[in-house]
Image 1 (spheres, one colour):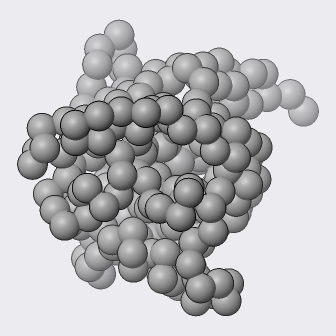
Image 2 (cartoon, helix red, strand yellow; image 1 turned 135 degrees about the horizontal axis):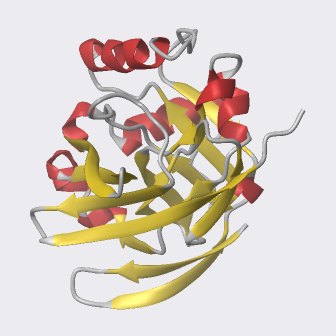
Length: 230
């Protein structure tokens, strides 16, 4: 999938086009066992089996990555969750945001299939990872959903609760035998708990906020629900 990003540096900006040919979702990426267990129990409440190990690296078809404002899903059972999105290009790492949109009904049968079946909406702006790596733990992720006609805070938390991109990349490379993340590889890096429990919504808005440099990456998308026929 060819993605187009506006790279926003601390003092400049430029456009970057990149072919994402490898898409990975790093699951169960909490930094401490208590946080991981909370998310496992959150998903267990809707019938999702416990993971075999943590973290896990789910390979997703790169054609599922999208930067569109509207995405189509089958049935009313899916929901989004904000994740930082690390991708390699020109020998460097960049960070954007993406939603690990997941079919929650299918998730109780297979987590891997529930992730693969849904599009993965990503933002159109990114930062050079080197500009935020030193204060990564200070960054905040937030998401909002539309519920009963109201904009409702759905997720909020610091990245200090999640494993760092370097740690997740290292774990992924160890399993693949690669020496470094190849250009064209994108990885979403885990999420924080949903406020009030996981639930579907037709509008999903997300933000990565950098309090040190006073800037944000934002993206939102709307669902079109396709009929679920037997």
